[in-house]
Image (cartoon, rainbow, N blue to C red; front, side, top):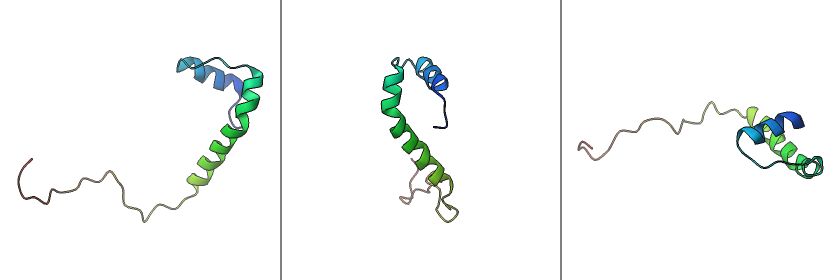
Length: 65
């Protein structure tokens, strides 16, 4: 895992999450690792031809809103 347990515990405390034991971390660690793996794969995507969803679009109705 890319993030150590102390960092995860600090994040849980910061966001007022639940306290977790080492045994509980052992249970969720594979799922967290799969999320990290997916994020790494997403970083490799070439999105240069994908238009931004944030672009402003002109109103086609002709009237002011």
